[in-house]
Length: 419
Image (cartoon, rainbow, N blue to C red; front, side, top):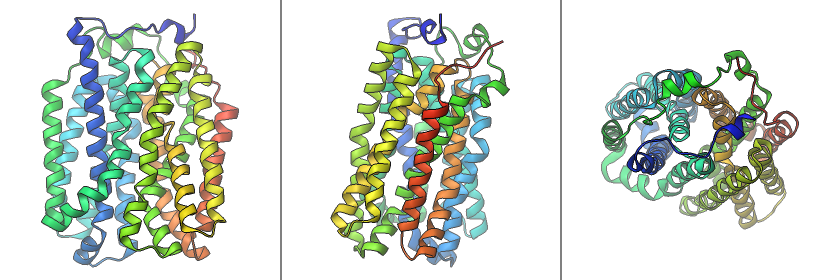
């Protein structure tokens, strides 16, 4: 019997209350994703007052953007190991309170280099979030529900990007960028307290017992697994699209199409609205195929490469259109389809690496974080070099296309051998 066939279709055993607790876990993960990304994107809306206060230019601001991604990159793999070793509650509690404290401290910093260091620390605190989310959902959800649960939880990401301009810009204008950082840090503390009080490990088996009852997957075989590496590279491409949308989409519309800031604000909400629509559809479809076939390649891998291929097909005409309307439509559809298979990436880690879900998720999120370091810098350099965003879109298509090829060729969907 294969690993997938032996996984069963049961929630953690225990009382009905324990079983229904999984829905609290899903809602909490959604809220965490929302707060997490509001913390990330507020910097983009506070660019002018921050540059004026610290007397920095776009280069210095770009360093602040990349510093956060460097922090997440430093801890993704380690946090996955710690989650598998010590459990979600202990590790995620420390992370939540730590990142909230750093968020508050950013509101009081006066020296640019200290602000830069705090951005790295913030990334380290938030870098635990998505591996912890995947581990907690894997602990609590039935296998046939897992893809949909992950998909719903991840909706907090595009929702934060959708409402960020509507909520954060007025907040900054009303109370200033410093107190806006403090306010978001306070919300993080509240979420952390709710988590510490309300979250519990699955009643049976516990994280430690679950790991002991499963055949151990050797570390070397896990990190060199072709499916995991191909998924990681495709997730790097996914991240490239996401960070392009977050960091450079407004600049592309302003610089290449001379749109005013008000029009840019509304136009940049469309990709995330499409992502909000497509992500749950992709998660539901992936789960439905998984229930029918029990094949990771069919249910997860194919969903990923098909969605990313469609994204490339929509990105290509962006380089040739002569209408801002069509540019916005094509970019929005491309980003929406690229974001759609978000949950299947995480589901692959849960499906194939039982007992090592946190570590496997840490591996692919490390690839994702690396794109957060490279994409903003390379995109800006290519835009300067080419006198527009044509070369940047070419690079984007190459990166996403290589991820498609990697999933088709190397992601077999077979679990690694165990001891």
